[in-house]
Length: 150
Image 1 (cartoon, helix red, strand yellow):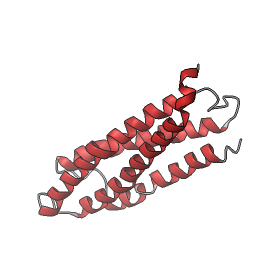
Image 2 (cartoon, helix red, strand yellow; image 1 turned 90 degrees about the horizontal axis):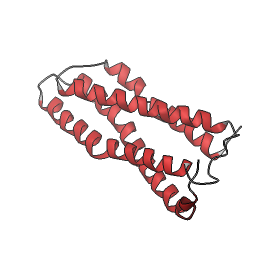
Image 3 (cartoon, rainbow, N blue to C red; image 1 turned 60 degrees about the horizontal axis):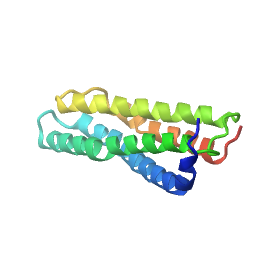
């Protein structure tokens, strides 16, 4: 199903979607890095308390709204006639990539709640590795959208 009324809005929808995705990705790159530092910070210390505030603000003020906007605008793009060739295969991997990014977002949200309660949900090493997940997913998504290899 597509909505022809969206055709004239396509350039604006695409631009706003890209802006939302960039903001979402910036936060997704930064939050796991904060968790690396938080994992090493003593519980109850000044650094730990500062990181709690930074993590909460980053998630609530930037990452969550950006993800919501990216989803809403992405759905709008899908509903715009001619944007997606449903007979092509690239969109399956693109969809898997953004669903995985959304699941990772949920994982980071849960971890932030754990850090806020003075827990240490995972090790510093875990967060160093997890910090690469958004990059891998971004590469997959961008290649699927721009190159459309199949």
